[in-house]
Amino acid sequence: MKTIETSSAQEIAEYLEYLYNIAHDKALENYNDYSNIYDDNAWKKLFDKVFSDEISQAICKKFPNFDWCDPDTSYYEDVNAFIEAFKNYAKNISNENDELFPSINTYFENKDN
Image (cartoon, rainbow, N blue to C red; front, side, top):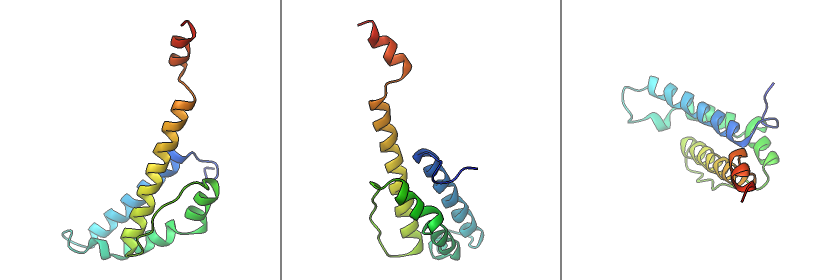
């Protein structure tokens, strides 16, 4: 069973984006247009889910270098800031690992030189 502890940063980022999309779709169901979707209760539910021991606390424990700026303005803004910051963090980790550990093709291309 996958958990935050056993998942890669990229997998966690994808999961967070999935949760965000669920909340967004739910908020849209409650309104005919975009006028009030960021005030919707769906964002509070997502806020409670993301800022829990299960997710944000586990992420911060697993990735102690992860940091983000909390706008502390609304449920939507707080959740969006956290998710976007983690997606960028995961992307940077992925890029660092790519540079640190060359692909097999790069290894063999450079081996003969």
